[in-house]
Image 1 (tube, rainbow, N blue to C red):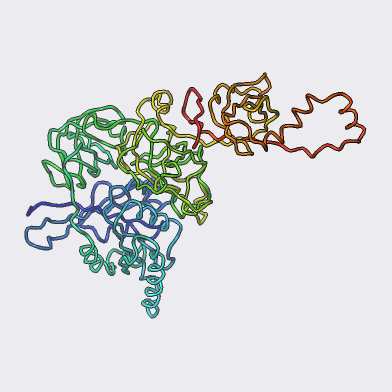
Image 2: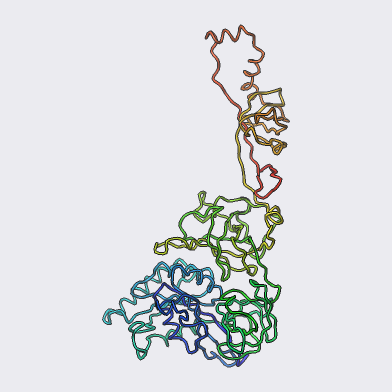
Amino acid sequence: MAGRRVNVNVGVLGHIDSGKTALARALSTTASTAAFDKQPQSRERGITLDLGFSCFSVPPAAPGEPLLQVTLVDCPGHASLIRTIIGGAQIIDLMMLVIDVTKGMQTQSAECLVIGQIACQKLVVVLNKIDLLAEGKRQAAIDKMTKKMQKTLENTKFRGAPIIPVAAKPGGPEAPETEAPQGITELIQLLKSQISIPERDPSGPFLMSVDHCFSIKGQGTVMTGTILSGSISLGDSVEIPALKVVKKVKSMQMFHTPVASAVQGDRMGVCVTQFDPKLLERGLVCAPGSLHTVHAALVSVEKIPYFRGPLQTKAKLHITVGHDTVMGRLLFFSPEPERFEQPPQLDAFDFSREYLLQDQLLGPDGADGRCPRQQWALVEFEKPITCPRLCLVIGSRLDADIHANTCRLAFHGRLLCGLVDRNYAESVLPALRVYKLKHRHGLVERAMDDHNVIGRSLFKKETNIQLFVGLKVQLSTGELGVIDSAFGQSGKFKVHVPGGLSPESKRILAPALKKRGRGRGEAARQEEGTERPEPPQHVTLSLSFKRYVFDTHKRMVQSP
């Protein structure tokens, strides 16, 4: 193991202008191709518009241990580019949340914290720009902000995370380079204590997240990125699935050092020939044939508690999967109520089970206080996407007002099953047993005899009553009946009562029977007011059934 470098990815996230790029620059000894605001518009505005990367090395803590290479993933804080952060978060081992000490938590820093909770296990909070605090009151202001941040983290999984003050670029961006950063040595020591050697798995198909693509004259096209799974060696073939192109690896580098192989977690550049870099600025590269393009997906989902307002079935949201963000239409469903407490299954989707359609994604503050331990969504993408199974999925409203003080991240989850067939609505969805519980109420119009009644007001005139034949109905007087057939053309129906009508039903329905058998004189006496009619009483009936959302035959099934 000695002499081997192990790459650790540390995300640098925070609100716009909190000094993330300056911090990464101060920490780094070597800059990668994508680092330090390479984009012209980024340099002009002084903000990071894309994922920037740079690195520094940490000597082995003990003999025989590997050299740790810390790769800094500088994520943008610009609100409209939060999708880039989401794409970057999936390759991060530890997160540095950069806070402007003079401003504290801001909208985007809160969103970064939400992403961190979803995608990272460890956090370090960096209070930057301490040089802007008046010298006499500096320590008091740092202590006050530290307490505030501790309170903010209290209800997150990062409770008790270390908080450290620094000044990455004393005097601001225009200050001369002679001004030495403050607190950076202490920050490096803190990072060393927080970083554990990540477990990397070289098995499984090769998959790499590419964030930058460029050509080198006489060499070929270089794709830089981070290996998400598997391993790669010189001479291997790789596929760019979005373009359906397969290329052979000509050479590889890790931060300007040629290498013959690389494994999961490594950040590297892969050189291939005869490929136009303009075709792939960002995306996925994989072992040939290992990734599929999907048109829809079944996703295990969980509502983000900071998102305000309901998430309705049939809503359209921005869906981020890997580095792709596309619009998607959602249909939410849960286990059947008696299965609400079953433990989540996060590695596959079970088509053999039945599921209950939900009008909206349930949160812990649901109407009746009950929330299933697992919920799912059918996500139908507006454009096909290429992604691995079990990858992170985040739903957000990126079109919301970027200046409003609200969280735009709505839900997160795992992609359990991708639907690769363009005609999935016909080929796959009928096997998805999601149902809606329906309850209808009608009236017993009259009794034909002791075992048969005629009902109405349960169906519309145009309803095909044949679909409901055989379903049980409950009479308000307690009897169970079975829908036998349609009766006429107006939506009425015949119900058979196997146990016979109860005495109460007969009493209520008797006037109708008597009325048919009464003589003319009796009716005339009633009209003259000599016989007062009893106030009308009714026997109602109720029908509960399951309607399967994707059943092409529109069959109805009795609900328990």
